[in-house]
Image 1: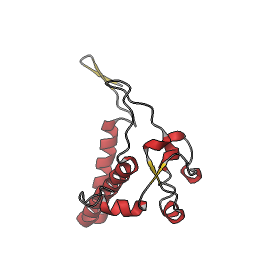
Image 2: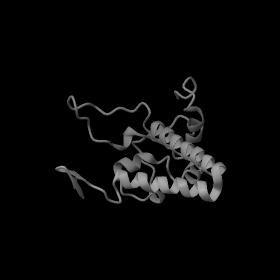
Image 3: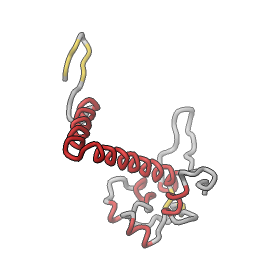
Image 4: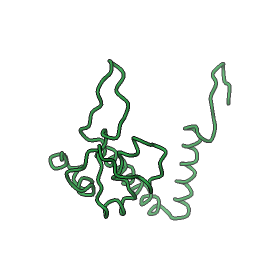
Length: 142
């Protein structure tokens, strides 16, 4: 903790300030060791990784709504508030990611042991197909 003019600032390993500092050190290290080409490649792959993460998150919850309890509160998240896919090959390639509904039911469960959840909604298409089309709005609306 740092106190400055009566304002307390938390600087720890989990703070945003330290995270930004370590990210800056990483980017400088990559530029020194791998050069500008390596740095550009790293930044592009980071952009792709974050984009895929957001696409997956969007797809797994697309069109599923929770009931409002009042103006600022909604019902608790349940397994039927996300899409599921029980395709054997898809689950092997994506490490059971398509069994997302069970994550809402038991958030602490290891991803390797996520079971099929009967009351979950199943994707009308294979999840990898959704991943490919979702960035293109006319085609990605399911």
